[in-house]
Length: 414
Image (cartoon, rainbow, N blue to C red; front, side):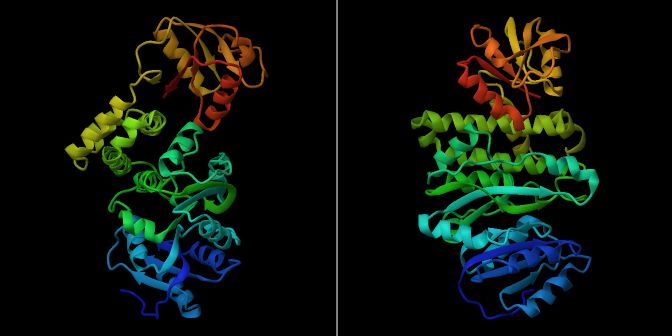
């Protein structure tokens, strides 16, 4: 059911699917209405909320003719809400905002200005996180993706940049897109699943002809209880990830010519596949067992095949999963956290000699009984380095290893 209003074209459509977000939706809408430019529309889809979310949306729509509201008669999920809002959009550009989050006042003006000036299909930018509930303070404090200001690239170049620099965002509100680009390529969300952003963003980036990234925050994310990312996981979470990842494999078939002709792009695609499996392995640990035990009634054979594909992709050269059977005879390890402790256990199972623990800044003499050394101290040896750190610090370690001429690096994912 759509609220009838006279429709006209505008520069940007802000699309907001909403479900039971009454405590937050006003802040979200106000952040858009406070923008420094006014040539926009807001398309809201109430996904059959059971609280007062719908009433608030219609209240705002009555006050501002730029706001249109549509309501699902049954709950269909965020993907269906985004797809419906996109079908209603009239803007040259599209921005998708979650109903409990906000944007900076200058966001729409600056982002559309850059898109128009450089004729971009997609522009990516950074996030600021906050948590009102102290239980989520640590999650909000985690460093989000930090880009450098890039030149305009093709989508394939952009994937290489993201993979090589560990800056692949899985959050749709960190992108603004040209609507014609989405429609021409048929880029839509998979409906009926969780974590729909994963496959969507991979396709969004790879198909682009003109894309760039900005070292500036425009998106403000609220970390709260009972959101998709903070609720406990179920088989539906696993199925959502796998369906999204399987979508990326289907796209890879279309891009095979580029994969075959461009070694750098091929390496980026391979790393994406390996990171997929690592993400599942890290988040759900024994994901295969979880699927067998919990998700048998929901995960069909297509998804099982996708999982096996992920597992095979994770087993390539110089990248091991946490259950891999063997390390080299002698290694250096990086870092002093829980990942390194697991790498030490893996070394013990492999009868591997650990020469020492490499750190960026030496603040202790030993870790788990092994001497702590700086990366510079390992530069003159031929012993390979095992990199087993969180993805938030992996980039810093890789850069330090590269600067010191250390190229024999094995990445271990747990």
